[in-house]
Structure formats: C-alpha cells, structure tokens
Amino acid sequence: MFEVTNDANRRTVTVRLSGFVRPNEMKDFAAAYKTATDTYGGGRHLVLADMRGLRTLEPESAALFGEVVAYGRQKGCLMCAHVSDSTISRLQTARVASEAAPGDDITIDCVSLDEAHTQLAKARAKHFLGAEPVPMARAAGR
Image (cartoon, rainbow, N blue to C red; front, top):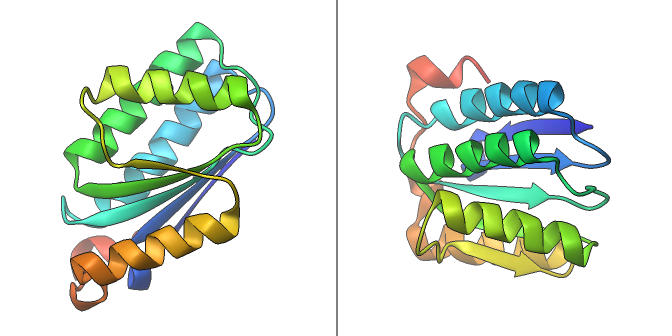
C-alpha cells in the first residue's frame, strides 16, 4: 500500500508505504512521488517518509525505491524525516538510500510522526521554506 500527498504551502511531500510493496505497485508509487516532487520545479522541499508497517522490499522494488530517493535528492529535497517501526525495514531503506545518494546526510530517522513533524518544522524555519512560492504552472498538477 502506498500514498503520496503534497502540501505545497509547507513545501512537503508525504509518502506512506506499508505492507508488501511489489514491483508493479512500487512503479506506481515512483510515478506519484515524481509527480509530487516535480511541482517544486527543482526547488527546495522536504519529505516525510512514513514507513510504518513496511515489509522487506524484494530486490526489484528496492531498486525502484533507490531511484525514487535519488530523484528526490536531485530535484531539491533538503531533508527527509523517516519514520519506521521495523528495524529490518529501516535498515534496508537506509542502505538503499545510501546507495542511491552516497554521502546522504539529509535523512533524519524519527521514532514517531510527532518527532518527524517537529524536525520538518525546524527545517522549514532554518531554510525559510514558507517564503518560497511554488511555481504556479506546476502546482496545478498536485
């Protein structure tokens, strides 16, 4: 199961992955994530990755997930607040992210959604993200 939402006012893409995410579903997730990311036109934004309940990804799904991580980093992601309730899933996604974006220092592991929201608020304040408008031509697609 996946869900992708975009809060343009807070410049935050929220992703939710749970259960077994098979390659076909991961492809759909990747397309939805890229669409949300593209609304920022390469501009600075944040990501909340809620991975609670996510099961271990099979190799093809993991490779697709790595492509998603790399895409976000290339397109202006400043920070990813990551929430997981499974050590194995957290380690797998961390490994995939580090392979996709070597030297990745923008992922923050959080123990709860509350902590993730706190970290995102700090990042918004630090980077003055509320002051940047979303390009209008792309915001309409959200």
